[in-house]
Amino acid sequence: MMTRFDPEASASWLTRSGREGDVVVSSRVRLARNMAGFPFVHRATDDQREAIKERAQECLMDSGIVGRSRSHLMWVDLAGLHALDRRVLLERNLISQQQAKSEPWRGLAVSTPDEEYAVMVNEEDHLRLQVVRPGLDLTSAFREAITMDDRLESRMDYAFSLRFGYLTACPTNLGTGIRVSVMLHLPALKLTGEMDKFKRATKAMSLAVRGVHGEGSDTLGDFCQVSNQVTLGRSEQDILMQFEHEILPQILDFERSSRRTLLSKRRVMLEDQVQRALGVLRSARIMKAEEATQLLSQVRLGVATELVSGITLEQLTYLTVLIQPGHLQRLVGRPLDQAERRIERATMLRERLTSACG
Amino acid sequence: MGGMGVKCDMCDNEATVHEVVVSNGERRERHLCEAHANELGVLPKKPDAETMSAMMHKMVAAQGHAETSKKQAIASCSECGLTFAKFRAEGLLGCPACYQTFEDRIVPLLVRAHDGGEQHIGRVPKRAGSMVERQQRLMCLRRELGEAVSQEEYERAAKLRDEIGTIEGGRGEGGEERDEGSQE
Image 1 (cartoon, rainbow over the protein chains, first blue to last red):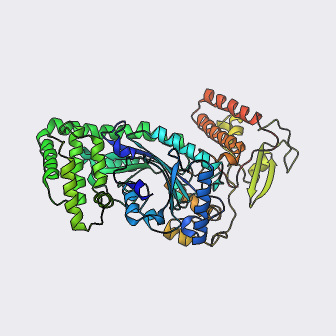
Image 2: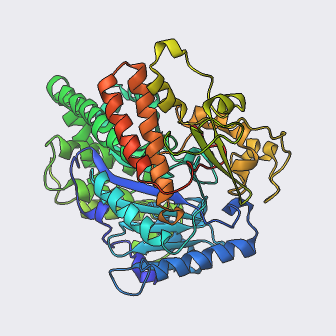
Image 3: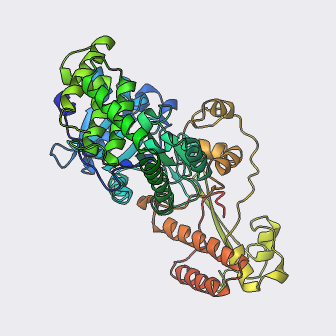
């Protein structure tokens, strides 16, 4: 099972660039669900949490979502994994910080090797069903998520009320329980000083902007996750349509017009920044994760604006994950302290960026 | 809602408001004429009848209205023991029943967190039955009808009214079913 979480495994959002891939790294639809007859996870006893996990596992298997073949999701008892593997899953956004703890009642079902489908068991809610796609592809992610939901629901009584919809531990997820999100790369907004304007606009549109690893994480290297905040009083379709067809086009336009401005008015500055980033990545001997993320982000902007060739957007996305501590240690095949990680990180980046040219 | 021939529980007039309240697993039906529905607070305050055609008013009024909860402020959830103070401190409810227990105090928070949303619209578990889906569709159509009327789009309103009639005509015996406290 451990080998399944090979750092070089091919999660589709890390190996393929999708629609609008110059700005949208990945799309995700997540549904929060709870079973009737149990308290929410944080209020349940360990015995109840164990019972929730067993029931979830049973229903996931009976409904044909989890199984042994490659067309099924694979069940993972998180406590049975090495801490480093949990770290790898966290770095790939398959589990949350909370879920990465070693309690025996936490579970995960995940499709391999694409990692597009996942069900987190006993996170904040009993179940979180998620579908992730490369690039902008919320419609199919939504369709797949509700297919999983329907299959699971045929075996399980959800906590639901006609007034409040799907009942969730946190009232901010109540109603549809849907969180539609995209991971965006917005380097030009930052370079042109428009980030505050972007954040004000997202707030006015009732959107949440978070770091790449969800709530509480930083917006590293100009990557951020944007998601809907309203889940009650509007249908899933309504939320999805507005997000994909009204909100996102505006964000994409904003970032792209900032890129055009940089190319036309501050081209030398942009070239200098991109080439310096590439130069440091290809020659440094010691590299911190934050610095590497920032530099890779600048090279990614260089690729998107055709100032850099010989490397693809998806290779750069993949590298932003590979440089993280869990992946790096699994890649090298032994535990590394922080100083060793910085050296190995620099080595790996030099080797993998040889083909990139500015 | 008319034409079903059910009499008001309180008088001999035809009942135009039908309500099924499910509370603690018990089902209670009420059939009321408009006057008694108003008296019992089942309907919203009657809009200015002069500004709205009688037909429109009837349709909008039939949307129903939340029964103002008469529950006393309850200290803790009987199912899981969570206190409201603890919820305020941690931001998480303890169990599905908490939503009912603390309904009065949670709704204002929901309205703020969800841009005014306080009634679920969207998917319902199939196991909850097609009745629930139909009810949701009706609520949605009635909301649209109310909007159409307030914007004086009478052609759209007439279409919506017909659609509501079709859905209602397709149902079996019994009144309009709704969850306790459901509101439009």
